Image (tube, rainbow, N blue to C red; front, side, top):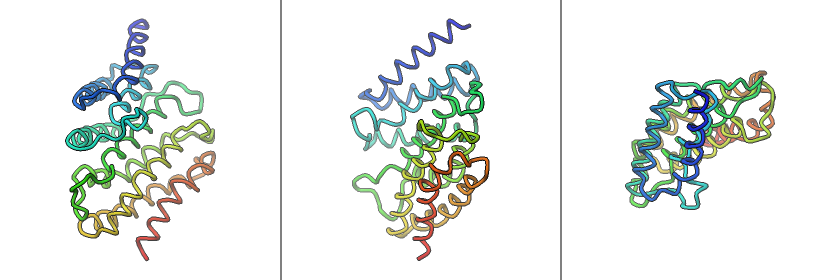
Length: 239
């Protein structure tokens, strides 16, 4: 009922602020799995979907918690969970909140979760990582990048622009998180170079959707941002 939905929103808001500070990665993974299960079961009311996605985001992304990026074994566990969450996000669109032509909170939160999952999976290398053989989570993220860009672009507004940090800004963030990692693989050689050279053209092809008239309201954000970044990296890889 309505009361239950309101209680769920309050609980999710509390968890969103508390989980990034959890000192045990397993706690964040456990609650993140619960968020994915709730959304997968279709039991989250439309008005609480944004809060559930925000809670999922707090489980994956600790960049605003002041604790820095989780590394080591904890980072590997979070990367594995991020891979599962990303697979879910790419297969499911957020429920519409009836935003009246503009992207609602759930759509923006969904785009942020996609970017955060990719960022977690493609995090900068840890000490001792083989520079010519990227970790499995990063390789999977590279393979899913084209679908990730398409997913975020589908959530962009219909000409309303992106002045408040919506999906178009997350498109740029997705490019800024992934492009430097792909570029470093090209320089390092080995398996990473091959994977990056396969992924970059597919990412640019997927990102070309932003050139359509439907996205004209987002051009000022995405063309000099994420799209230019991807095209620049692709051009550099061909030199």
